[in-house]
Length: 275
Ligand code: ATP
Ligand code: MG
Image (cartoon, rainbow, N blue to C red; front, top):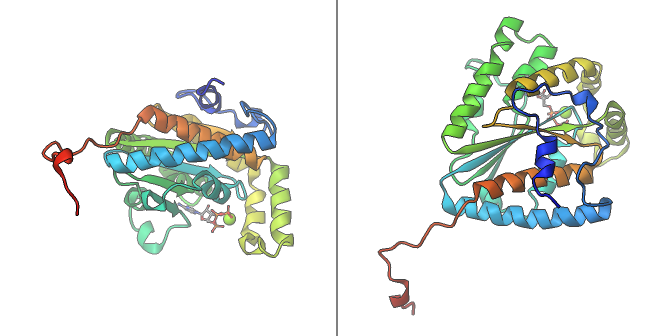
């Protein structure tokens, strides 16, 4: 199997328009087989990701920032749980972005985001992100258009700064269908262990589906860059979603090729006696 094919196919090419509506959320491009076969491949990728993360941590020079965006019930939480299963929590930092606090709102929109970026050696995971500032903010007119429309450039510049500072930025849009969202909401209402996740506001947001889709297309088109690419992951099938995100992440880390640092040359390891 061509390992890079899935990255190439899910990528939003820099400068191109992202046509999310043309991508089938139930499709499974480059899955190695049926659900069971794909889950077995994902387990293998989980192990490889754990190994690559260990090397990134030991090298302690560069970092990775994973951005997860999706409609409500799009699977951000599930992706964090499944993709990073087996990865040493010591080298990971997950940040979930909610509506900004009074303090956060009193600063520029990237202030809280910059504080949460991974330090050298870490994988940072954003569950929602600075992109909310051109998504929910735009859909609900939380600031005037002349304010949010300038944010695409600010975001691209910010991500270029991170890239120049040794942070590889990888962004995922988990793409579910409107019907799949309805099904997941029904499950949230019906199942006692899922009910805590359900908010009435989710139904309100669902009414703005088309406006969100348009805002996503714009955001992905304007901010997929070589330094910080967007990948659109068909996400109706959770087993495919996990496989696809793992494939892109492992592919990205393989290209970074983090290395264990060489032993201190001033120490003659052969002469060391530990008693
Ligand atoms: P799930 O998808 O599992 O429900 P969630 O990410 O929606 O998880 P919630 O606590 O339900 O978690 O919602 C967080 C809310 O915070 C979202 O509605 C999101 O749009 C909102 N939010 C995040 N960042 C911003 C922002 N910068 N400005 C305004 N609202 C924001
Ligand atoms: Mg929610």
